[in-house]
Image 1 (cartoon, protein in one colour):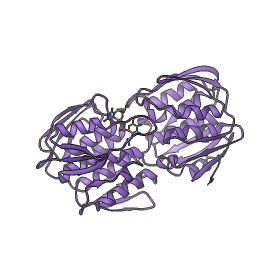
Image 2 (cartoon, rainbow, N blue to C red):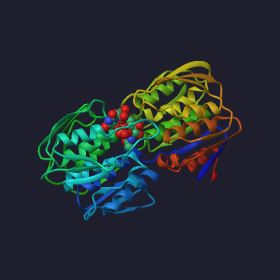
Image 3 (spheres, rainbow, N blue to C red):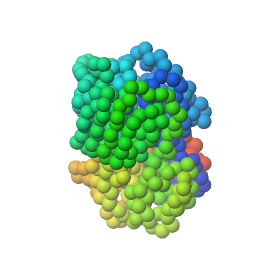
Length: 420
Ligand code: UD1
């Protein structure tokens, strides 16, 4: 296993390119299962999670080829196996995204239940209830969901209790090939959902309501392979913006979409960062002292839960003052708090809120990565800390940050990846 060793205190300067979004690449890749032919998906990030979903597709019989420039081709003509094994699903919950497309195109699928995960229970009951409403027969056996649909799935009216991102994506894919009209209310409005809708439309799907919480999908008998591109990663973008806030310096992020980070840019401006938005770039600089802000995570366009840990590192660095960080999406997403405390942060957790008292900075120590975004908060703290920080179990970071070490080094950070 590898660890990261960071010598803190070197301001970040220069320019880096933001990669394609993990959370958009995964549903786009799953959507290639919906139609035979040769699909092209561009701007696919080089991540452990994208490699995992490609392995899953190959295990079904699809042929995949990912070029060094991020152009992926998938040939899903011959799908001979309809089972997503526990071995692959347990490493990535988002594997459940194959359920909708397999069921819609082949009328059956067997997908391992994802099980628990470090940031909470994260059930998939919304996905299953919606598919049942669309006529699927579901049996939970030996840790697997066994799903079957008679001739084809049927359109239905579905309303989610909470807007689920992958739930919305699964139902969009299932409904695209269902008989009749599906109306999905309280749908997730994340840009990654919009990216999937664009791809499905290019494949011939009839979908209305993009970027709203009410989606209408008129099923079509068949879809065709298409050429699509993954949108830039707004969470990677936000992570680098926050890193500059914590460490100081001035950085330009290219190939990103400022319009996908409305609440994040607002919040970081309140913190005191200078942010200039270009059409597809953002320049960020830290000029004065950091100010305390309160943060509440919300579905898009609110502040993303996937940046909660990182912004907590930033708030731990203010000179005194309190910030309240309230997590509304996942019940157990404060695993990073104990590790940030090891680096000198003053944070108290009370239910779903973390009360952060600015301690003026961090002091390097040995810490352990617990989940993907928690790991990013430790990297940010390590970059800002006095002395050396060693982060073990960095495989979590490799799930979601493309070339993290290379990008940080390009900005002047002193980071090394080595064997533990
Ligand atoms: C996606 C993102 C993840 C992000 C999360 C919230 C991907 C691959 N992952 O995860 O990075 O942190 O959105 O923005 O896109 N829920 C249920 N039952 C369900 C489904 C969800 O109770 O069947 C609850 C969840 O426990 C959570 C909330 O709904 O409290 C939102 O979760 P959801 O949007 O589904 O998260 P994911 O799609 O798994």
